[in-house]
Image (cartoon, rainbow, N blue to C red; front, side, top):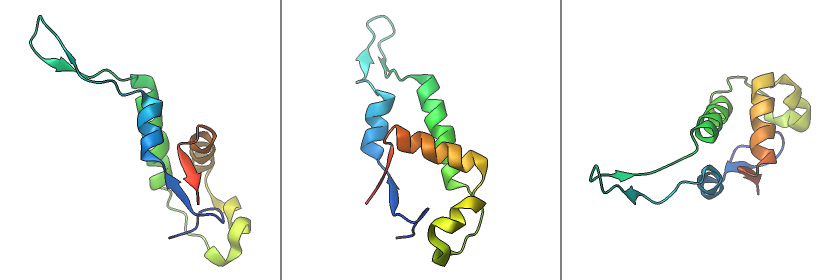
Length: 92
């Protein structure tokens, strides 16, 4: 595992699913199809935050540990802190 900010973090996919409140498919009598409803605002925000985490391009020296965390970008820090605050990412 690679350390991020001195810890081993992971995306908790089960928490993300429950946070987005994915509902069971509902059958529509009129159209004859099934519909799944999600909160689109939460979905798009989580998608953007995770994308920001996964595309951070700054190379850091792992030996520096927490001292190297100052070289991360502001969008990465906001995305990381937001997902950590909602407990969508956790550390071992």
